[in-house]
Image (cartoon, rainbow, N blue to C red):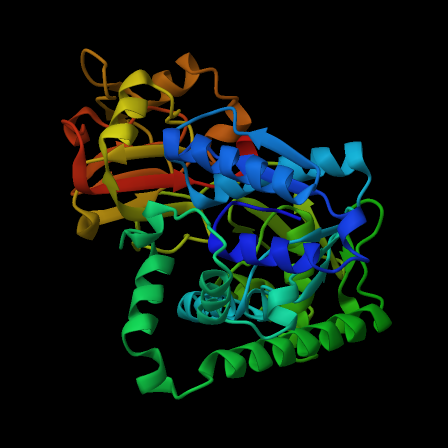
Length: 432
């Protein structure tokens, strides 16, 4: 079981421990993300002490880096720790403490960005993963909400750790949580969380049915990584999009938007050929078969608007408004956060666009004595030639703001801890 030390996981740990049949088989994994300094270290000590008191074996993991990082990067590091422990301990079932409130928050956030069936069905009570392990979320299965588990912990006098960052309105999930707490029942009615959970389960069943239909039509990913899709000609868009999502997930592209899949869907329906990029992965439909091209996409010179708060599926860029506190500023000043994939800058989000490289591009990188040709900067950073065309060029008010792999522009330098800074992250798999 994954235990953070928060109320949710402490409740679930105690509930599983109370089952005498489960107790001897219970193992706890705690991962220290090193995001909150001494508070993170105290979380690890709390979990270790709790497990000692309960007589449950506990393994502590720790992130190599420290300071702020994107939610996706933190999740990736945590999952790598879980995978390592699966090999060492040999378990096949991992329990997490997601509850009904998590289902509601997930549904609202993913509906807002146009997620597909798999995204809207998450988090599922029981989920199979391709590496052979399963994740069980008993609190969702039992229909338990946050208020219920908090009341039970208080009644029993069981302590837990509070993550202060959960109270900050910086993350979209926190803002949704506050919004629901202030008027969720008044707006949606009593028991709305159970309704969201039922809908998520129905959506998950619908997705499973579509994938089963696709398998019956022969749309199965081969050992070489291709998928035959000729049988999908003239079929419903929903069926084709689930096939595309299944195929892209195998390529590391998680939950692409429906909009980004429309060109591929239209080509498959018509039996045509096409190739286009989805979050940096170039997908080709040719001869009734889906495949991925190894060459990088060329984005071209047309500027596209970069929206704040959602990943641009074509180029993999995400723009967010965040607060840079003293701890994060210290990490940035030390150079702990590489600009290859993530930068924190001072720039207005309303003027953000992006495009591909064009001849003559130049800008003044942070910390450099002056401006230089973008092509020379990429060569100096030893970025391979075949990857350079896959790099989006971020523009602010007509000037180059950032290119992944390079420092941001000098004119957007942060002067110190800043409220409402702009964070840009890039999730293109082409650089590995």
